[in-house]
Length: 417
Picture 1 (cartoon, helix red, strand yellow):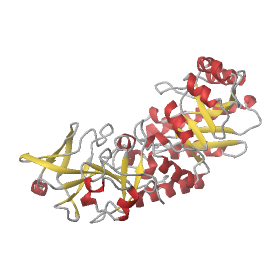
Picture 2 (tube, one colour):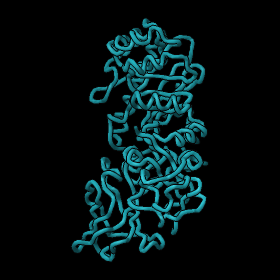
Picture 3 (spheres, helix red, strand yellow):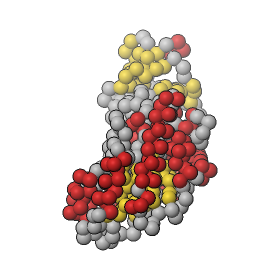
Picture 4 (cartoon, helix red, strand yellow):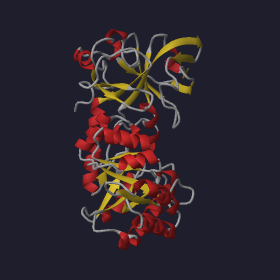
């Protein structure tokens, strides 16, 4: 699978993952030289080519085996080449989370975009009302949302598909009662320029671990989507209805609850998990179905690389990556390995990241890790892909992050505005 190496032109200092030696040449020329990891600057985040491919095919195979479709959440990566890789693997569409992301996805040629929020921006609604070949589905959770949309869709060239957002107490958006969901659907049917397309929801805000109690809460919520879908049956037209749920944490439970509804042409069940493509060594490793018997086996594709720049006192090392480079909102990075003087990657125990400043990583050292020296490079396992990708406009793809001498084989371009 090729990503962006042929699409990125001249490299330069505006791309922080690119070494000075590559300034002034194209990404293709740079990668053709098989640059080793030791030649890249730090701090750095890389993607592992084998893990990306494993995750892409594993998720596609799982979806086919359980009988659901995928619309991976594009906000995770905001990387059109990774979106295309997911579509090439059989994804039904791409999910987005803001009006700008929706507009960008359409400009990138995504054929089916699921906007998991209510679109109320007048300019975007008028844009969506123009003739288009791509399918767009948006969310609404109340008659007030439909009333706000109505003036801007009345003259649309084609109806805009609306999914009724089903919520739950303590959750995010979403109709809190069956009556509110039905009233919203009736308002959609009565509004020129809109079309009732199905029901949607998000279970991830209702639970935060994989305990039996949390999984039961998720299942109860998903059962409510089934109830709403049944109640809206009289309002659907002759087209296919969509039922969608599933963040990256509980998509196995979603499939168990909703897959019996999946009958393309009549009802299509769509799972929106997106973090799987990169996975991680933190939050998602702990909560995803990949760690339960019901899920596909994912591998962490993202790794951080930071250089030790100071040993100011015993038991402490400071490295050159920080909050501007590494994720920290769902757990701190974890030290996995060390590269000494550009040599082979070796496992490292006794080193723990205790804090991140804007541009510094604080590492506590015990035992054998006390021999860490200035200039050594640490490989970090990361937690939360969504807040990793947004810090890097260009991400090098290495052949194998676990290898003694990883080699850059591609690049991925991200777009975060």
